Length: 313
Image (cartoon, rainbow, N blue to C red):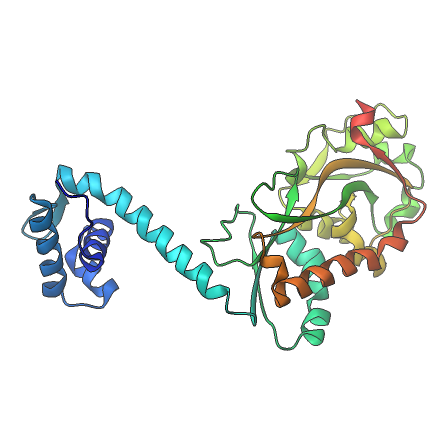
């Protein structure tokens, strides 16, 4: 029995029909007539020597052979499409697609993009706000900015500084709660997006840092970091603010960070792209701009007393 593959067009017709479980929908997707698609599938069945579909009156079902072939065919075409897209992107130095989490996009990236666009008018920048783990080859994303512990095998990775957190509140609320001890009675905001950190970087950890035994239970919780920070800006309470996500609000005096004590996690933001892609001009320019923007605001945090949270356990 020969292992030589049948024509690619016939396999493509079968894959689409198996995915839709409809010859008509598959024909519409491939922009061919149902008769042409049926002919391609019939030739594939003749090549295989057995039927791939059970043809009913108004529907089709996969035979055992069809069910065996369908998953591999879909996976193979997805891989082929991804590889083709990656190859095409290698010749495109004008379009730059960046993926970042919703909080990073809203609180850090978006407020700065005008400067990048002004200095790089030849780059068509596209930003996708998503926490989904990206497949940079398949998803047509050039750069991903992700937060967490470093697990970047197979990628070019530029880590930013380690993340730290300290209480942040409106100037008016800072007058009401002028000392760490007074925060025991303050309305506290919890950023649940940090629940995965180990050791935890939470209010109990920060209170332990300043010598106070307190595990607050009456809090307002948000699943997204940017929502937690916006709530603090609105005066809802005090948030354990993350350095990069609150910097714009601190610079605009919507928030203040009245205490110098901060807890630090080993988790950090990283700039990720495929190996070798960092040499492409538009990706290199974005990386250099990203690093420069981080350094621009580092002086604001001078005097902060940063303690690794792992030293508190």
